[in-house]
Amino acid sequence: MISFEELISKWQKTKVLINNREIKGYIPETKWLNKKNLMSMLEKHQAVFVKPSLGTGGSGIIKVQKGEDGKEPIYTYHYVKKIKTFTTFGKLYSSLKRKVEKIQKTKKRAKGRYMIQQGIPLLKYEDRLFDIRVIVQLNKKTKKWEPAGIVARAGHPAKIVTNYSSSGIPMRYEQVMGCFLSEEEIPVYREKLEKLVVKMANRLSEKCNQLQILGFDIGYDENLKPWLIEVNLEPRFKSFKKTDMDTYKKIESNFTGYRGERPVESKTKRKRSKWTLKNVLENQSEFRQFVPETKWFNPTNLSDMLDRHRMVYVKPDNWSFGRGVIRVERVEKEDGSNEYTFQRKTRIYTYDTFADLFASLDKEIKDIMQKRKTKNKKYIIQKGIHLLKYEGCIFDLRIMVQRTPDQKYEVTGMLGRVADPKRIVTNFHSNGKVYPVEPLLAKHMNGEELVAYKNKLRKLGEQIGQLYNLNAIGLDIGLDRDFFPWIIEVNIWPDPYVFDELEDKTMITRIIELRNHWKKLDI
Image (tube, rainbow, N blue to C red; front, side, top):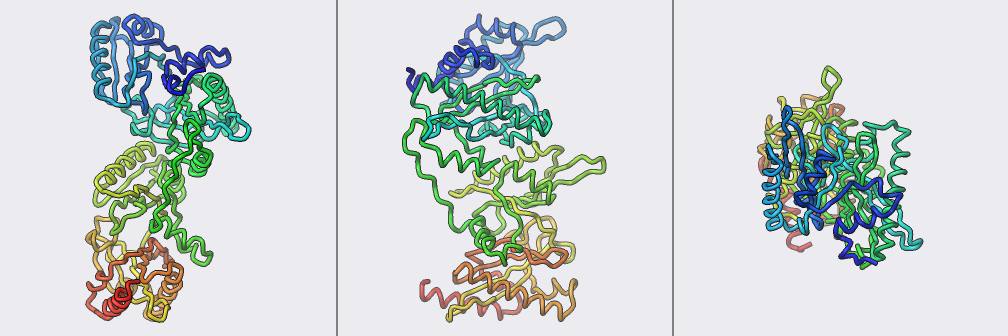
């Protein structure tokens, strides 16, 4: 038997698998790194990957290639985003050796002796190399290995690895393989792949009985033959959050630790997130219609919602004042192709492919999160509402709902917020302007209709106030071109002083009166 610690080595796993006849044909040729082995492998395969035997997360991997410049050989190596070129093998090897030594000293995740692996010419999705991550788990009752989840990973165009930590994009297997297979062929290829990795899992567990969960990284070549790139004994499965939350929850619920130890308890969701507040409304059939479709941010959900709605808003789950909100659009051009854009604050970016859009958008979100200290780093996608406009600028309504001393709910304030012409949010903190409701709606309805409409909104606000059982909530209501009131957001810490911007002080007086009442009681 082999211990868990010994089997962590890529070399050890390769040795175990390559000794099985059924599996051997799917394992790339692998040798230890030295001058002689590198030369022979380049002569045979033209492209190889030089990687640390104990490395994780795609760290420290270098792609080495041999080509021709006319009749003369030319050698290159590609590390992260940098490519170096050499006219002789000797110069290549000397530079490569120095690079490996430097990586081993500076990269914590690039551990162990370096090895050479046959390069597999991976298929591409939208000009991005991709591979497949398959998770298999040991069934607690049957003690048999079972496929738990499968996801595709499209790499960054300038990088040689597909990992999410290296700017790779997790995507649905069916979406990516649909570029190469018919709808009928996709489940057939998926089943074959799952059977192959289960065979590999059985072989590994014969040699190590501590295994509980495994992650197989599989690459397809141009003939759609699967090749094993790597086996992970401690696989992360967060990428399933980005593509298939149900699969993620299934894997997590069956997760018994990497060596059978008790798993760490998952953190509970923050109770006052946009997602949680939205669920309160959706759980009531009479209010569900007012909630724009909302999903967690991931490439599958974003692609799906853009296909159906064409415009969506991507926003932080737990922030306020319109911070971090991004508008994303899909535009169909005259030639039938798609163009994608996203806007944050006043900046607009345009892309020709969805993959390029998502890669840039994902990086933008990561940059936003790094600048703010917050525990909740989740983003949601919300169906975009084409809001009514006032003097060419979009506007929405803020409705303040408060609990009265006799435990009833009262709409104590209602105002309009008109966005800055160059921005996508209406918040006062984002240069929006505050207006009374009447002049904003006067261009769309007559006096009697306006009074009736305000009463309708007031009734809606009072009914919703009862659901949350708080002393005050602020409803952000967006009106579409049919005057349908969409509940864009529910604020449980509404700013009362935005009403002080209005010339009429009746509303702010009542708001502060009730606010002070509950403040004295400290409820």
